[in-house]
Image (cartoon, rainbow, N blue to C red; front, side, top):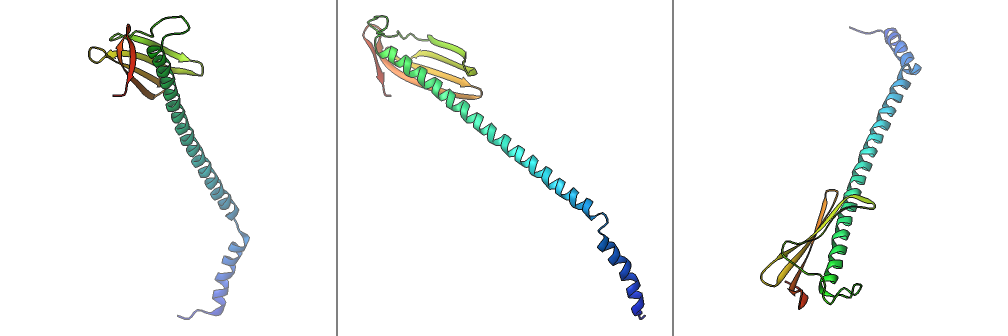
Amino acid sequence: MLIKRGSNREIALPLSRVLKSNRGSSLVLISALTVVIIALTVSLRIAAGMIMSSANKQLNQDQAYELAVSLGNSLESRIINPDTNTGAETGLELTDGATLVDMSGFDGMPDAKVKAVVSADGADKYILTVTSNVGKAKYIWTGIYKGSAAKGYKKCLE
């Protein structure tokens, strides 16, 4: 069947009028842009939340480390060296099972806990364990000492 030239024209004119009028295309374009903007906003919010969560976890780990190390070093200096403030001739006395410090809640760290416990390892060897918890982060500091309260304590490197 042959199509007359005039019939092509009759079909093409109404189609070209619809395409040229852009009826509904602006609504589709605005909807697509809105979906893209919302998707970008949600993805940025999720990324920012993950970064903040990671930073908070690292802060808790750093605070737990600082708390345990500073208390451990302070106790170590009092164990090895005489207490010059009170005039005592010997430092802290180490006994098996003794809890030297058990504290919780500090300024700026309400969920922080620190505990220092002594355990015996042989006749004259003691292990000082300082455990600090800040949030879900935990750090354990240990020091090993040999000696007695009468003779004084020396730090062991084993």
